[in-house]
Image (tube, rainbow, N blue to C red; front, side):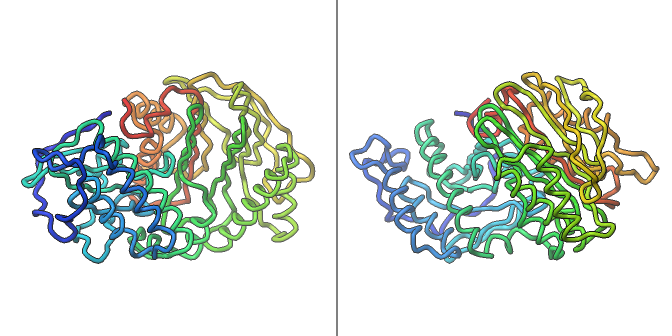
Length: 438
């Protein structure tokens, strides 16, 4: 189990939700932490209490209940943080009796390091030991839990804390489905109506198994219009689509919503790629008509064999990163954009090699232009990802930093929506998306 230590920090002594009377069966007096080997397992007690409470739990009360249950495994103080929509800031989740905290930058802080690297980061403090533990929904980074302990945890105690944090993350996801509490907290400014629609339509930004990891990103987070993406993994098949709708703002978001919904409808009805593209095309043409269209790439990967099939509907071609080399897939004649097609498009095919990374993106990435007029370009995109892979960055962090890099290239003045999906197949680095792995 990997724990990174940082320098002591200056948080004040915990008092607001410290539980001096919390159960401590078999506690280790010298450490102040309950023993997992005790007759009554503190972890089981904490998980049981949290699960029992969650059935009738108001979303606003989640941080309070989590703190109370964490006290059963020796945690003196618990504060939850969620990442904002741009993944720039960690925002504390308030609650009655929960210590007040300031927002924390994802760059340049111990908390941010835990989020960026998906690892537990610890530091000695005046009255104990502080841990920053990633909150993950599968491998999707939601935020962090700040835990104050009486002493540095053993490997066994740390394992218990990770189990507890996993349940907390799942409860955040479940509660988020029927409350606005977390969505309001995560926005640092007002979302446009188009962006509101797009964020509701998106799948999780990251999904992973032991064979494939899929990560997406899009900007501007608070004003995204026509760019979007979708994916699904069913058995040994991974389906992906990246789309760039014509226009901007609400009209483009409506078009993207129709396209994504039609794509899901066709995919869930088990249609092949050409038939799926035809159904999306018909939905756009039939419902919106006129000059409304969207460019897109629809791809399907056989996870067992690496067989990749795709359709290019007037969109930038997919890229394959093999090691540090940019590989152009076989030429695939682009079909007309979705909404303007006059027949089923041609389906192209290649085969990925273990360790390959497939990049699907919109032109807002490669055509991002610096103040001097220099395009971001395909080679810069490939070089960035290759460097991130060499540095051992987990896929979600690689994409997060890429989107910041694209913004910086344009002096933070985004000229067009930009989105990307990166699929990693059998890279051997799948566990980098989890804490406690090297």
